[in-house]
Length: 483
Ligand code: ADP
Ligand code: MG
Image (cartoon, rainbow, N blue to C red; front, side):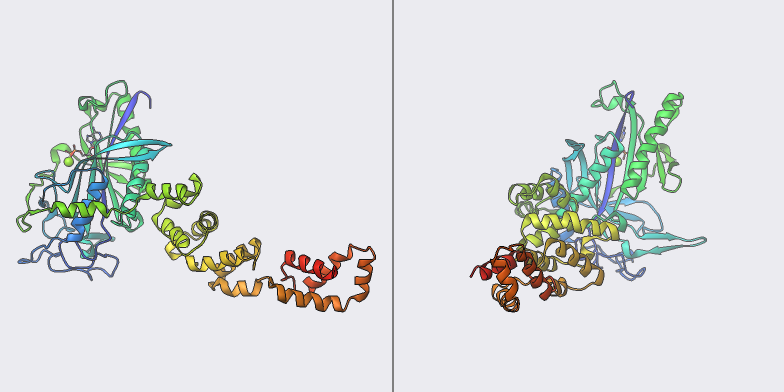
């Protein structure tokens, strides 16, 4: 693709999942229950009901705005975006447009891609309400209003991305930010992340910083997975190149297309002329309110440690390798698990090793998240403690780990069953008893048959069913024989 340069801009929607209630009503911030079980009159737009702004949703959006280096407004405004659709009972969505100003404007994000730092400018980030969800059946559709009013953050990038993989790396970085800042679980499997993807191609020899050189933008609506984003971008770039190569590009108009997961193609939805006029105006039911600068400072100071900070801490303070630290911070839940291990006293390197090698492969094997993983840090500590105090060997530790997972039993049971005898007194008694019945062999040993030493070790192992600590056994045996 040296002849053409792709320009990609993303509109990423992410539900704020960490508030207790919806953005304008007291219904729970949850839509997993049975359909229409979590709905307040205001979510249904009953006449006479009024929205009440959720302060925590505003706080979290301001925090996101800060993390994205955006400018925060002096006043918070909401606006009406007017259109009709069955998933939108009010006939409008309460959102924020760029006029007067949303929760964040003119920011940027830096993220790692292919070992380099890439920068994407953020046009704006705004807080809005999610719509209801529609389930389509053969001849009917059901509307579930549980999702209506779930807080949603939409961020709009400038078209600074140039490939499908780079766009996905950006989205993964954003997901990590939302998770680490405790704004959202940002789980695309739960439908919490959705993207509109804008793609155009331009002549690679021209200056991409001059918008006059940009090609005609095609927007793809509601791409629901990162894999979908990658495929949709690649498909669209190739489609547009083909139009260029066959001389049809000039006829192509600015348009909105739909990404069709099944066929792996984009389908025409509407052209620019059919664009909906949303007739935005400031939401009259929510008077603008001033954002206290002191509150902004508080929010700024409460931004949690993000992935990159944790990674640096793991390397610089806990002595982990760059590789281990990178693996650990990829998912916040995994990083949290690791930190809990360290907090309760497992050696950091040992904990990192268990998590990155043994635990992650179990998670992949069973396709589960670490929150669903049976062994909690305090159970893992039973194993690492037993290992450290030489009660069990490292081979036994792995066996115990596997067994407790298979049988869903505390490792303690298996540790007790397996643990070595490493009590000096106990071992001495056992050894003395054995020697007492082997006078003849002791005499031979002292007469130069030193290879009998291994025979005595064997007797101790036989007596203890292999549980005697071998190093200690040898030490004590030597002492006793040399007496
Ligand atoms: P619209 O007026 O159609 O909403 P905007 O200028 O608001 O368009 O941009 C919407 C999104 O499209 C943004 O993410 C922006 O980065 C992206 N975009 C704008 N122009 C282009 C282009 N020529 N190629 C690719 N993406 C673009
Ligand atoms: Mg726009």
